[in-house]
Length: 379
Image 1 (cartoon, rainbow, N blue to C red):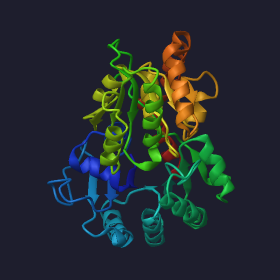
Image 2 (cartoon, one colour; image 1 turned 180 degrees about the horizontal axis):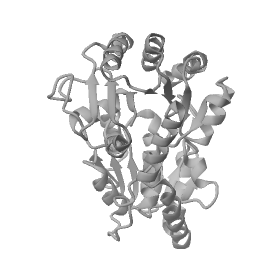
Image 3 (spheres, one colour; image 1 turned 90 degrees about the horizontal axis):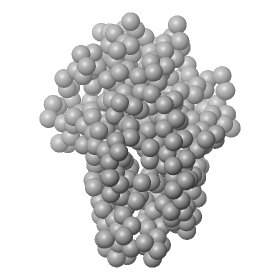
């Protein structure tokens, strides 16, 4: 079997180093079966996220995580140094590079490629600010992404994107269509995410990082509007992030303490599946996304979805939808949520459709396809 070097971002690395069994861990559990060895290079993670220093015990017997001891600004140089060391020892056959602003992974991969000439693939999970910018930071990232992406792509063997919208966007930005590979990253374990026939405790649920681009403030505005029609309405917010305290203050100021419950992070996939089964509707009001996987997880549990036109959502909803598209407006979210909660026939239709859609993204088969597609590139 071949060997692979994976270069990932801070979030995935922190999850692995802290022992959290998130999406990346679950992917590696299956993905590792298709490779002799996987080495993962990642940036320096926050102090206290791991007790194992900069090298931790291998995962699944053949997955090795290498954490940079250097500050982020020097990451491309450390990436180059560590990549050369690993190549001399292991002679890996391919690199996959999770790329995003400020592009330190792409810069490091280009430097390493010039030294060892091993083919590499850029993996772009979402394009900053598409389809909508949520902050000035995203505006800046979007601007530089347009400028940098063609330089970034010049030495890469291929670019992996996650949904149909991204294929069009990358082509529009000047990346050769021949280099663009659509390989979705949204796959789920249908043994975990399934209908459980649990009592519905929550009308609405949000799952995700609490940051501006997730649109959570819009959802709270919608709940305020729904409150006037249904004072017993319940929203469960699952996640954590930089906006947590601000959102809790907003809930208090808007007198929504009775309607909104903050759960924090779920411990693992099984807990997420359980709380999705206890919820009537997943609401995902994001401004931009690459997936998101949680939409599929909800549909696999028979929970209809209200989501903005981001990421994989247009691909999922183009035939028999498992929910509805919402605008970035509190009135629209409130209107569609209220109507779906009161329309049992439509609710049942979306629930059944969602179960059928989710079957197409079964975890083991999707990860095997991912591994096979990567191996085709180096064949």
